[in-house]
Image (cartoon, rainbow, N blue to C red):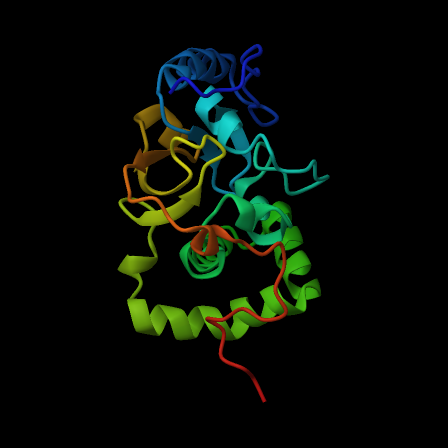
Length: 220
């Protein structure tokens, strides 16, 4: 993809205590990642971002800085809490928020003592819209679509790319786990952009915030 941000490739961000061999692996994996023309990132079970490529950084270059929810820091927090998320992630509520909430719920069950996941849950509880989505919308949505449909790998989701040659398009998420990434409880997620008919100006309008998630049934 020609429309990419320049600059030096960021260094991998392994967690504390990551063995030197794993750090070397991540450095080489970063080289591979940057050869991929589609947005791609490596995340751990918390969605903390270890690696991104140039296409990923280009996709999110227009979002405002955020202390805890920048897409290059933690992608889960970006989807759930960043006010600019809906300007890049099309159909933000149903196509991105709810699958990420389902992923978070599963991760919290697997890692009940993880302090980072506990902090995410506290932040969800402090956001009335997101808390309603997690406690009421998510079970309702899962009963409608099924657990399998909530998975990331293979899902097709709307995307709003800053490159006008893509514009309002779709991407298919491909989730890959090598044996070394599995040992690190990490996975690679690639957003494979798909050619789609151009949307109208009305279709491409996005909201930075909402008073109520459309997919969440009104409670009481």
